[in-house]
Image (cartoon, rainbow, N blue to C red; front, side, top):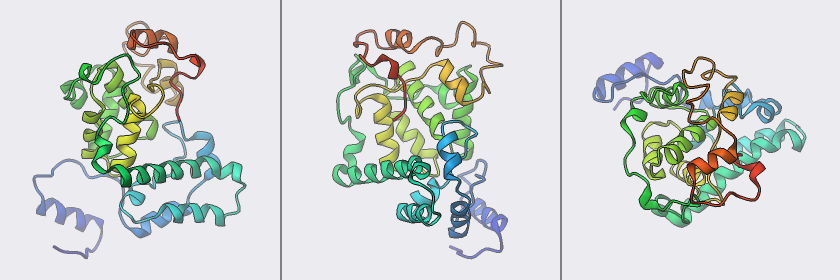
Length: 272
């Protein structure tokens, strides 16, 4: 196979010809060390910490390069150190690097065990209560929920989803549609350019509650806030038929009728 190309268009044309069965759109993510270093130089850790939960926040977009070994976690950490930022500014980003390192450490120990429930579900349901296959309407982006359909389409056409969107889509599949997290994890790995088995699977387990103390879920208010009402304003379900409408306590009773309401109800649905 060729290894040198005149430009990116030349590379895309070659790959398209060599693998015609792949089809589909080409991601905007540019590969290579040069692109990775350019993004690394553009890091704004103060803005990352303040805005990373918003879909238009100042996220790094470094994960594909870290996933494929173009950049190392240590390189990102050392770059942040070299800029002289105070710890309070870089801590949110370093914490995410630490999570990724933690997942990798567990992957080394468990291997294919990351595909198994590490603990029982804390939802009041057993693993047998969850479906093995993804619903076709989720895969095709035809659920009628503009937010979830948009996330599904973005996943499959761009190979990227903001982390918060990943959590929302995972929670929707597991808790609203009652699908096993393994089905969703495999779907993500099929499409994500930064799809890393350790980070992906153990994050899905965190959402499911098979590797956490309680399930992660969200409500309409949470989604609207961090998307600036992008989908909620025009959603036909926003007023009374939105499945995410209600307080966390109300949603807990609806989704997990056989599970006790956690004592720390004010923290229901919060992120790690």
